[in-house]
Length: 103
Image (cartoon, rainbow, N blue to C red; front, top):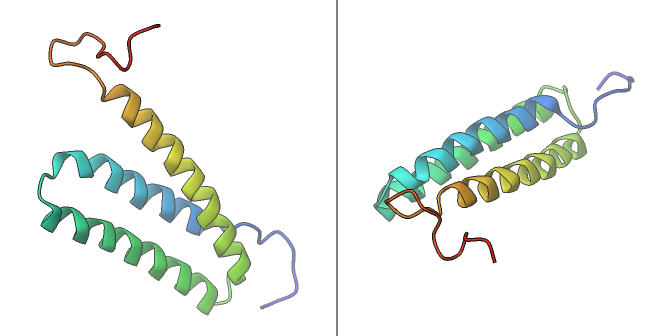
């Protein structure tokens, strides 16, 4: 690894986590069978792990840079999950359900 600054966190890893994770989160509600959902999540994790390994192996980032990006990506995906969860709680008629009605 050449001596330099500015490697922290890995933008490549963060992009991979958010892109693959968001695609997975958007597809999961459309898939009913656990036999299809599990491989999708495993594929997402494998793609992120491959990107992460490649960046460390080629010397573009330190392992801590990659780990920091996993944390950043996880927080962004959690926010996306919470946002998708709120917008999906509507009754078929389009009116707010009992959980989302104002109190």
